[in-house]
Length: 113
Image (tube, rainbow, N blue to C red):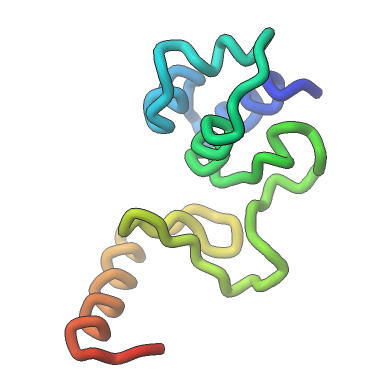
């Protein structure tokens, strides 16, 4: 499958349109639609992969494994104060609040883990 085909599959899996993904990734107007005929920049491809909780390798068709996590199944992706996934699955909002509160408490009290 092509990059564009993989994007459509992942978009459907996440219940999102390509336009929504484009906006969440902060790309220019209709950038993803241009990927049907143009090669995206590495930076933009990474932004889209992050929105879809997958790897750029999966989107490019270099792997059949959509999971972006390493073999360390206890990894939690943290960027811009936003927890993204755990074991390759989105974290429910109510869990996020609990995790953030625990971590904020540790930071406030100077605890390092």
